Structure formats: structure tokens, C-alpha cells
Length: 240
Image (cartoon, rainbow, N blue to C red; front, side, top):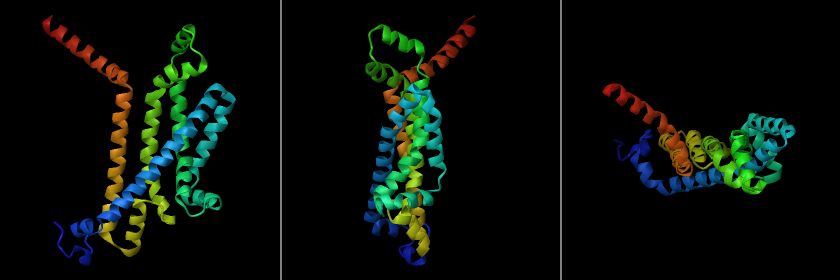
């Protein structure tokens, strides 16, 4: 349990810091969530047409995947420096860098999901008179959702972590508090902001997992089928 003067003694765990800096922490969390959400949403909107292009035009698959992979290998400081002349010291600079980093995960998972759609499902839909647009939205996209949402989960957790790098230009959400705490050797601030960052990543992953299960109920049914068969087999063996 922290002491009342824990901020004076600079302890790692300090209840007084939580009470006195509550609004600062809330503002940092809100900024962190806003930057992360914007980056992931924009990333999905860009990755989806890129994955469609790579799927319909195999000649573009290599360049698209190669370019997104190269972008992911660029160090964050170098990425922000390259984008600085375009966006200046702003939240847009951080969001754009995070969008570019998310593309390698989102494009690959979306493309993998679309490619995994059974050809017989496409042929059956075409036989029922489905055009390309209806085929995509009513057949291919629902079947590709598990892989697509898995990519969104990975990209979101990765973006929560990378957002902290924005602290170098004072748009890093919780990362700004971590960096300021390190500069001033303020232990409670460093620990609290770090724990909140971890909790934010875990909460985002759990929420997206719940969304994935809600949107793809057939995956739960298919995963339960082997267990049901095993139980039926065991019961039959016991009664034999």
C-alpha cells in the first residue's frame, strides 16, 4: 500500500498520483485510443482494395505484399522523419505512420481470407445469378471474415504499442506520459502509463475477439463439432 507522501519519496506504486493526475491519465488514454482507432480503421479501408487488387490481378500480388513488407521494416523514427515534411508535427503524422505499419498485416490476412474461400461456393453463387459485387459482399467477404478480423486484432494490438512512439512529437497518448516520466525519473508515472498501455491492448484484443465470435458464429459451431463427436464416441464405447 502506498504512503500519502509517495510522490515525494518517488515510489513506483502511488495512489496519490492516481488521484491527483486522474484527468491527465484520462486524456492520455483517450488520445491513445483515438490515434489507434483512426490508424486501424484507415488501414482496413486501404488494405481491403489492395487485397482485392492482389487477388484479381496476381501480377500485382508480389509488388503489393513486397511494398507493405518494406514499409513495416522502416524504423519508426525514420518513418516519422520521412513523413514530417508532409504533415508537420501533428497527430496526422503519427496516424499516417501507424497506417503504413498496419498494412502488411491487414493486406496479408485479408488476401489470405479471400483466397481461402472455396471455389465451389463462388460457382454456386454465380449459378444463382450473383454478380461480382454481390458475390463479394454476400459470399466471399463473410467467409473471409475470420482471417480478416484476426488481422485486425493483430494490427490493433501492434498499433497500441506503436502509438507510444508518437511521444517523440508529443502525440503518443500514454507514450507521452511514459517518456516524460523517464525524463524526470517519475517512477509512478512510468509504471502507471505502462500498465494502462498493456491493459488497453488486452481490452482491445478481447473486444475484437468478442466481435469476431459474434460476426462469425459458424466458426464456434465448427469448433464444437469435433468435441461433440468425441463425447458421442466415448459414450458409445462405455455402453458397448
